[in-house]
Length: 149
Image: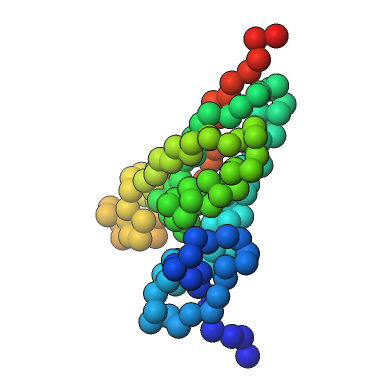
């Protein structure tokens, strides 16, 4: 039988993975019912993508990474931002980089021709529209500083 859910103790700054402690759901906690693993893997992928692109272009520093979160992505942009900041602390190439987050509203399409933001029922025919945008998380821009040489 699985154990109780894992929450990060909010009394100390989260440090992956050493500060994971079991708490009762009623106690709340840093992530208030969500697992940190999902957001950590997203933050790490953003970090790895930016670092790889910067290295490939001869950057000496990364200034800003812009990310678009779909409203239906099922991830917390705030938690991803926090974890991204933790990941870049000890990386000289990435240290000091900011993460600019924008949230994209969902876009759905129905077989009747409707296209819009309704996610659950088509306002024209009552059918179930297909979600075509709003679930993704995309790195849209990486600002780097390169040497003059």
